[in-house]
Length: 368
Ligand SMILES: NC(=O)C1=CN([C@@H]2O[C@H](COP(=O)(O)OP(=O)(O)OC[C@H]3O[C@@H](n4cnc5c(N)ncnc54)[C@H](O)[C@@H]3O)[C@@H](O)[C@H]2O)C=CC1
Ligand SMILES: O=C(O)C(=O)Cc1ccc(O)cc1
Image (cartoon, rainbow, N blue to C red; front, side, top):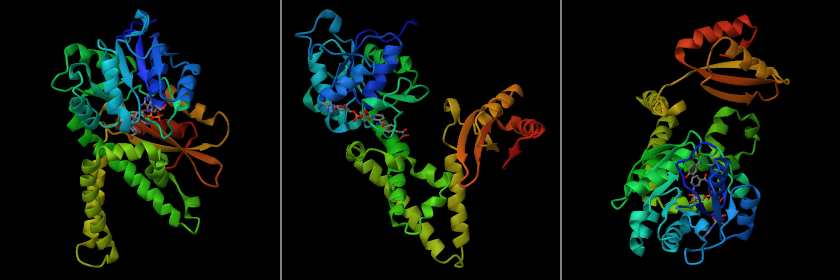
């Protein structure tokens, strides 16, 4: 077993999607994981699926030495995260306690207001998730390659920071340090508002009486993918970050009204320019989203038509590999009504021409 930064045992409180993923990831590294959950069903399922063993004790008072956690990871819904962090700080007076809640100011304020030991609480947030919750959705590799925010406070110790950063690194994440306020500002923009926009667009589809969705391609799918998220979890996340989210929503509403006014009469002076300026600003914004490995490098796409037959994608990748070209990004879409798939391959701009030549030489049809 590779040595880990995380010492055994780790206690995971809340064994849904996040908790069971933490457990599965740590078990894979050989770390001893104790599990606890208010729901016996969620707890039993997580244990049965290999996320760890059911914690025999709820506090240091009754725990055998081998069942006393060094670090407690609180993975419960946002509404109860603060109080669970406080109760875990009290139950395990020598442990570092972190939580993975999607907001960071509310749990921190709860710990401060409760007068609990702030020096042992280090809030954190892995920027990785799925639309479905519960232990069965857990994945050992959920955090691999994803940023994990560690939000220290004025009482945080070097030891506490090391413990939480070690956990994130062991689970394959890259650590990003910021304050709780900086975190909540950032997630309002990159996670909470996008969730609401996706939801609002998907909600418009309820008005579709002409079965327009049958024509839907990648654009609509990309924009509405996260509209399938869990309403209970998201109501709690949004309630804990309301004013920050509302501020950005209002700016967005201004942009949308501006666009609608231009579109209502495209012959009015400046209307076309206004639409073009919004499109250009969007191009600039999207170029800011980091690509692979967190770099801001952008890739150029080549879309290849692939027959919908077994083995065709494997052949495509094998041949690209043979040509010595690295695939940086990949997207696969089925063309509605046709027996072909569209494989969009992102490569470094400098190898684009080589890729086009190699595909052509091997008889592949390039769609754009
Ligand atoms: N779902 C996602 O994509 C992500 C969620 N998060 C955060 O992770 C946390 C957990 O979310 P999920 O795992 O998705 O939720 P989940 O619903 O899958 O799991 C939550 C678990 O907490 C348990 N629980 C509820 N109250 C409890 C209490 N008082 N004591 C002990 N256990 C309790 C529930 O029984 C459930 O098993 C949330 O705070 C969320 O903001 C963070 C990153 C991504
Ligand atoms: O929003 C995203 O990009 C996701 O991948 C899903 C997600 C949901 C909630 C979080 O707290 C963090 C990530």
